[in-house]
Length: 232
Image (cartoon, rainbow, N blue to C red; front, side, top):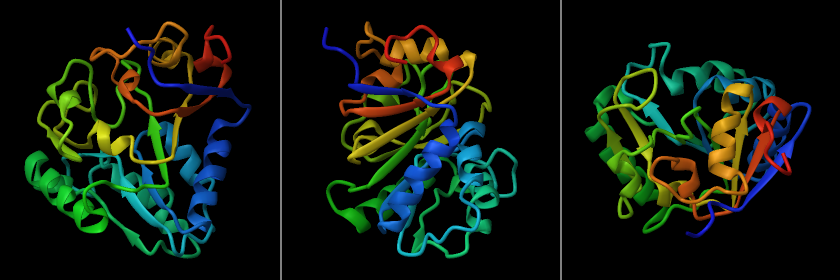
């Protein structure tokens, strides 16, 4: 079986700071940046307070189907941690409309992507997290959405991880549509997922969603998340 994604595992003292530097560089270059939710990347977004994102365009990897004011909203978290604290606003922020439900929200975001890019998205930086079950965005182990190759966005009626609410998610083809894909992974609870997705014995598997990326990735880790993975 062919190996999983080519992964550059980087153990750094300050993974959130390292990711913040990459996001800022892409923003200053006027890039199309895809942000992800979760508590781990939130720490990176908070480092960017006071920065100018003028000229950049922001997209989202996935969203929970809740109202913006709900504490589970990815957009709500990113707005509070990053958008409301910038000195200069992005040229555009394309949020997923989770409040419209998984199918309608996915169709609306698909239309936005195709209007902006045509037949294939052209992002500059893709920011992702890794779940303890090795899920990425809202693509969960064993779920049918992992097999989607025609659409850029799918509705996910049943989440495979907390919070158990329906989701909207970019598909694997859309997640791969950036020259720079960066995972931020911290904590010992993620070490096994790192090994399964990016370790020396990793191989593409529907049970390990992050292993299905057919594109080189950078994985920013703390020592706890790196575990015993060689090179980590």
